[in-house]
Length: 161
Image (cartoon, rainbow, N blue to C red):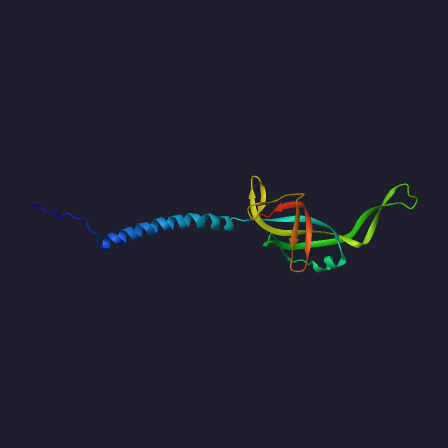
C-alpha cells in the first residue's frame, strides 16, 4: 500500500514572503493615491488678483486691512496685499431735470485692491481648490475675520517663480 507523503506545508519563511508581497502591493497603491494629492499641493501656482468691491459702508471699509486673510468655501483663499477706497460715484438727475450728472455718495464706498492667492494654472484657466474657476469678471463672496464682502475680479497676474 502506498501512502501519499507529498503534502504541501507552509512554514514560517513562506508566510513571511506572502506578507512582504502583500505589504508591497498595499504600499504601491497607497503611494500612488497619496502621491497625486501631495504633488497637487506642492505644485500650486500663485497669482495676484486685482478686484473691485462696491457699495461698502464706512464700517465695512474700516474692518478691512492689508494682511487680512480671506476664505472662500471655508478654505483660505488669499491674503489682502493692497487696498484703496473712493467715494462711490452715482448718476443723478441734474437740477434742471433735463440730464444726468455724476455725484459722490458720501455714505457708500468702492474698494479696489490686490489679493495674493494660490491655485492651479491650467490650459483651461486658473483654479482655486481644483474646481472653482478664477477669471476676470468672476464675482466671489469672501469672508475674513472681521467682515464679508463680494468682489469682482478685474485682473489676474501670475507670479513669477
